[in-house]
Amino acid sequence: MGFIKDKRTNRSSFHRLALIPAAAAIAVFCSSPAQAGLLPTFSDPISSLPDAVIGGTPNLNVRVRYETVNQHNLPDNANGVIARARLGFTTKQWNGLFGKVEFQGITDIGDDQFNSTENGRVVPGNHYPTIADPSGSNFDQLYIGYAGLPDTVIRYGRQRIVYDNARFIGDVGWRQRMQTYDGVTLTGTWLPKLRFDYAYLTNIDSFQNIPNATYPGDPTTKNVALNATQLFHLSYTAAHWLKLTGYTYLINFANDHVIPPLNFARRDTATYGGRVTGKFSLHPVKLNYLLEYARQTGYAASPSSVQANYYAAELGASYWRLFGKLDYEVLGGDGHYAFQTPLYTGHAFQGDADQFAFTPAAGMEDFYVTVGAKVEKAKLSAVWHNFNSNDSSSSRYGSEIDLKATRPINKILSAGIGYAYYTADHNNISGEGMNNVSKGWLWLVLKI
Image (cartoon, rainbow, N blue to C red; front, side, top):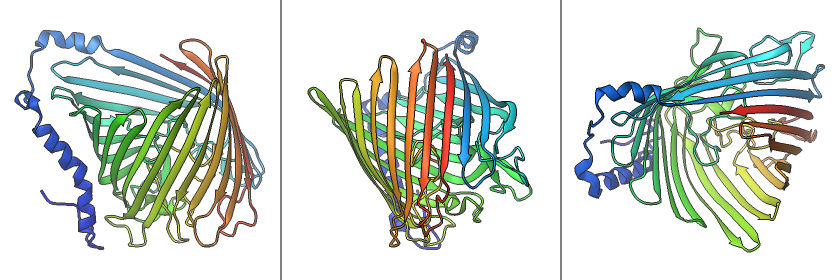
């Protein structure tokens, strides 16, 4: 078995690290006391197959959301009511085999006074801000799985993947169309408190159209092809106050040229990192923390200039119905390339106003403070962000305030309201995040 090698830069020794988690997992698996039972057994008769299929579990998720956007450099405000229905079904296991199918449909209600990225609303005299929820329908999950080996689950097909807090690998759950992935995944829990995840991916089912991202003859597509992208993720929960995680993400896009406005975000990258998290009680106060570091380098067809560091630290506390936390996140940049997370869950990071979907070339330093409270069944929160570049220019991007309130109505219904206001620093010499933007949301969710 060889190792992954970057032919241009000859970083073969560094890329050997990508196989360390896999090798460790295989060794543990093969040396397990349950080795004698590794071969699958087929004890369920064929007559029980219909019951395994029909007797499965359905799921339904319906979300209706009103969104409004005011962007100071555009003449029209965006207003849209977008509904999303997601209907799925997961079978029972039959001889270790199971499957899942999930279909989603998105539609706007009324006149779509917004740019959905594909409804033609950016034309002379009709400049609306973006609400990236285009109408359409698709199978967002469609896979077959096998759980007939000890402490092992394998899935093949289109599926949802979220690692840790979704900072690197996520499903873009805020948008109406979820981002999912085509490929093979493996999850192993072969030792107590240990979990190993591996993914081999060939395609991203994106949440919005990507102009000319994959197929030169197709003006827009939601399928972003990958060349043997591999994800390795290993976590060990030693105690409630200490969880250790290591990961290697080797992302290889099938289309290598730079595509505006994605630019740096669609470069091939190898990302190696680790995180430490935990929570503990100093009665009556409960504390939690996070420390994380990652290194991103060039990979496959990317230029050697692709290299940057990532740092994150968090300290949170809760008392009675009150909670708060301090966060500091750095995505390194030198003015030419900045640390990118192209498979992450957007909106969850760097402000609800979504002004930094991709890291500016000068990098990003985001210091933010969260405070909140639980009032009866409602959860209230306020977040203040301060955005700065990470390169030698020390440019300030601006600041943002995010307000949110959510409340369950009953066992299947919940509602929420949110507001975000980003204030740009117009002395920002990098040209990133130059527009003042305010956004508001009101939503209702039914989940069964």
